[in-house]
Image (cartoon, rainbow, N blue to C red):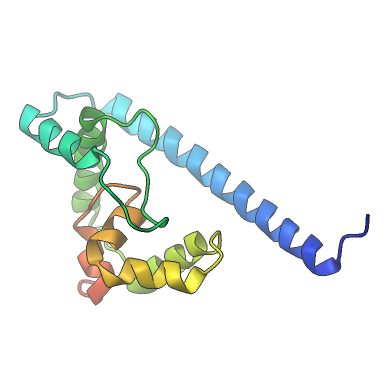
Length: 151
């Protein structure tokens, strides 16, 4: 069986991308776990209820809709979100439109039509919020979309 150079290059590129993504996911998960363990507090029930409602599956017309990680719960999502919001606020972290676009294009590379994927996210800002923020809507993306508050 002969595999063309182009196919080999595509396979290599995909494997490298997947390895990089896996490494990032592992590092992110470990960092979030450490943050959560170091910042144990009770999350207000009203926030948990609101987050649980937003995590319920909704009909999604396109295959691009982000999925929540398995085992996500309203309480853990709120807890993580509150911690990250405080870190972002105290450190003055702001997104940059170019960086958001780059991340979105990295995500799009996995799809047959990357341009459609990117366009779909920019059509509605809340889609961009949820995908870039890892499934949680964050106010950070207003800056990403408009360029306001750039460092």
